[in-house]
Image (cartoon, helix red, strand yellow):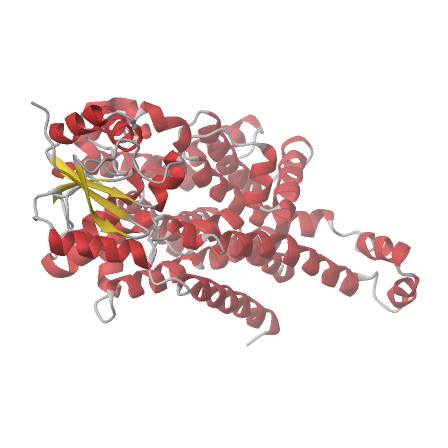
Length: 511
């Protein structure tokens, strides 16, 4: 095996080892992962996904792209579901390293720039954080999308790439529909950009783009037909309550984007995009620039959650770093000269190097190591904040063993999936708002139950949803900045579970 291939596989192995260390440092997945856990276990037991869920919103029909959960179920038959999801999700999440390496090598025709890009892709801070302890479709959808881009780059060279492109185009909407829409938007922008720059686009490329548009819209309509007909273009916003829409699509500052993507890939990516838009021309680089434009446009118009857009930009900028290295880093003495200002002996050593290239590579690697790994590891240390504690699990087990099966529970939206899975009890609402007619009202009512100072308001709303149990955890305390709901008293509310989590039973009714 070549030395440079060893470096690539060492990067993959080390990245996976770091990911597994952090994900297995906590026994539980993030709160939002338990939707996937329930789907995987239902597929393993019944052979089909859970379509009608009598626990979510006290009973509702679910609509989603199912392939990711089938894959997890298929790969988790021999080991416990949560352990399997932790392992498989992180294996999927290192696949962008290979996709980035292949694209970067295709652009530069050299291994060293491609290896640097692969290293940056391994430690994109926001992607690292979002996938390290979560059963998220992005762990598979992101590498699949960029592998499809790689196949499109080479589609006119060999037939096998055309076949692989067709396969990925069919798979992507079955894994993540909104990401598949961004994919075809990027391809359409590429067509427009090449036309503006008077660059030739191959017939097979035009046909492939048209094919992609038809397949993505057809499959997406099959899966989300009811949602499309109900919301129209508003389907993009997933029926998220207007009160929290800003939280899902927040304004992203430049500094925030730089930190979440990484300083080096952000700066070099912007530089390469500027250079190739106004100075140089290259069809393959225009393809990546098109997808950067598509992600930026969706972020600007709030058609995509901020973190998703930043993940895509992070991967694209990691690839463009290889172009920067190859095309603009040829002045290999820049870093050695800077170093020699502070360390005179370094200048003498540089004379024995060929243009200081080896020294430059070492300095560059150290800079990348610090700027990429440190933010990712800082994010990784926060995963415990997004995962339930043992006390929360114990409280939910108590709820399961000491309440009737049809008793609904009031809790924060973020805890809905966890309560469904562990306690096996219905919740008034969770984070999946699609096809819920009264999503805004339910969200508002939950906020009032947990935050109101008025006992009569809380009791009337509990009666409205035919529930009497309030699950008040650290999330609720942090969100509403109170230790207990302000209306709690011994007359109408019985503290049935008292620990880090408090569970209250409502004893009163309004006449």
